[in-house]
Image (cartoon, rainbow, N blue to C red; front, top):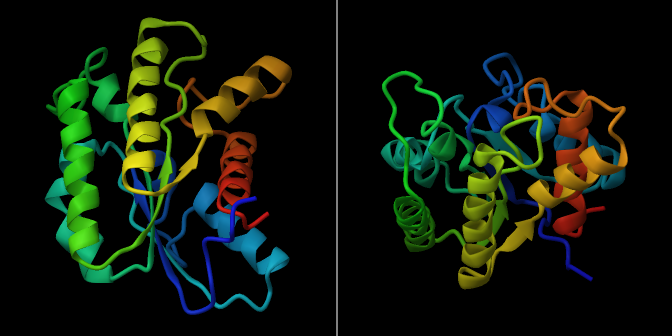
Length: 211
């Protein structure tokens, strides 16, 4: 059984794209997605656990954008636990243009991710939680989702390499879509609904030993 990743006094930083962002611009800055749900569930399940949670997800981000803002939005925050969910936009730009961004090939994605983790390690961050990118389209088998699976596999690989906790968001989403097709899990195949965010939150808490 996974030992709980959190202890009192921790600062937990969530990083990623719009799925993590989820409208965090309004107080208290956690958004309305899985990050906020994790905060609520931790308060309910572990009322004596004194943990600060920070959300720095930014909609549209790929691994290059994370690297660009890594000093101010990660290293300067000095988290004791760092959770990252990234990869959807690195893939999506191959199929859909947005804001002048380009597709990030798999090898570049891996190298970017390694740079993020190595910089975090050098700054003294020792506990990592790596969340796989889940799905892009409503169809489980599509060029987009098949390619995203390769990026999710890199997340598994890097979790082993950096002794991180792996959160199987992709596996959980695909299983839920297959077992409960009557539930609307995403708005567009990618962005979670409330049910989808609840699934992500539960999967995160289970993987980290907090549930």
